[in-house]
Image (tube, rainbow, N blue to C red; front, side, top):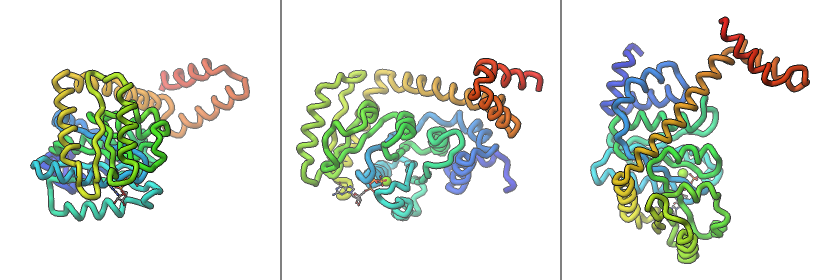
Amino acid sequence: MGISVEEWAWSVRAGDVRAISRAISAVENHAPAAEELLRILFPFTGKAYLSGMTGAPGTGKSTLVDRLAAFYRKRDERVGVIAVDPTSPYSGGAILGDRIRMQGHAGDDGMFIRSMATRGFLGGLARATAEVALLLDAAGKQQLIIETVGVGQDEIDIVRLADCVMVVMVPGLGDDIQNMKAGLMEIADIFVLNKSDRDGADRLHQQLDAMLSLVMPRDGWHPPVVPTVASENRGIDVLAATIDKFREHFAARGERESKHLEYWKKRLVEMLQSRVIDKFLGGRAGQALLTQLAGEVAARRMDPFTAVNAIVARTEHV
Ligand SMILES: Nc1nc2c(ncn2[C@@H]2O[C@H](COP(=O)(O)OP(=O)(O)OP(=O)(O)O)[C@@H](O)[C@H]2O)c(=O)[nH]1
Ligand SMILES: [Mg+2]
């Protein structure tokens, strides 16, 4: 393709769907051009509001995201959706579902939906997701929504990136709150009680309220519980209003800035780590050296400190 990275970046900023899609693929593949592209685009980011939607498989996250996105579109806001792990076993490959969703928004260039599979990302899924969010931010999307199944540390890392974290719960899914991953409980800014048309919704609501009343408010914010029936588009307006309220609450207290500061501290260290590892252990020779030294250490023929010194020394006279 005969265009410069500058031109490419310009097309992304203009919201060109093909340019954005190509940029996302470049980021996913860790293509050399991706870094340059992100560098050019970075000054134009930082405007989007990022919401994360997580929860157990099949709780209705995609349906919620879809309805919320439609709600924002009605408010005339440009929306980007990143669906991570679209292949959860529950729905047997929601990529199909995402295609159907996309069709529902076909022809609407204020809406961009992208699915990302969870396996095989160089430098980790959280890195790729964060960079895709930057791209969509630069492309002028005002509301970004990330959907991820709340199962592992990877997913928690992803939603941590969000300005507002929503944890979706449903009645009848072993509705003991104790079953919930403690890590998820802690990061929730808003609890969405979806499928509240089902039996047990009231009980779960009471349980959540009781549990939350024991939790100290974080920075003056008590995570509220918002009942929804996503499949019938019920409660979405209240959910959107609650997100707005949270956004205002934190903007007023400067919390968003300090959250971003913490985030970038962590990100810069991660980037430095991968740069350093590349430098010292990059390429086939680096990997061979690592294997050889690890063998020496495992066999107790060398201590690990000497091994690390040997790795560093090798690069010093390259
Ligand atoms: N009864 C009821 N069903 C719902 C509601 N919201 C979503 N569903 C249904 O629940 C099923 C799962 O919905 P999804 O939106 O795919 O759930 P998900 O959490 O994205 O699923 P995964 O991405 O596979 O983890 C679908 O059949 C939805 O139609 C609701 O509020 N009430
Ligand atoms: Mg889904």
